[in-house]
Length: 164
Image (tube, rainbow, N blue to C red; front, side, top):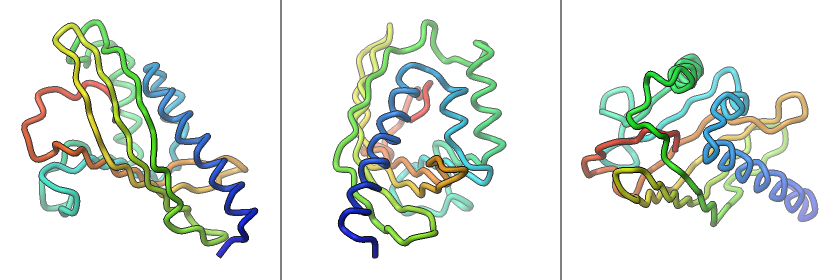
């Protein structure tokens, strides 16, 4: 267990990191967002519940690091958007918790997020619980694992043309 002071410092760094990730996503800075990932990163958005087996059941997104890179490249071409122009987005990140703070290992973090999406079609709210494993790489925090459990993931999702 980390000392109270070390824990507060870690919490501050984690909070700043999550806010930065949200800003990069909101501003469609996907190449910068991709650089936040470790080489073995996994990005998962389950469908039909929170605790499914992504190897056996459908997911909205279940990407390894190379698939994350491919997804970003496709978004950058302008040919794989499901909408033009892109949605305007703003994320609210809250309830940030350090779930496990063992020295010299990945840092387990959880948070809530609310994404406001404004598109030509409509305005949509996306609420989620996010689970992360963050890792220090060359002195910087990076995402080794991100799971986004959308509150409405059991319903039909007609478009998700941005990264959650």
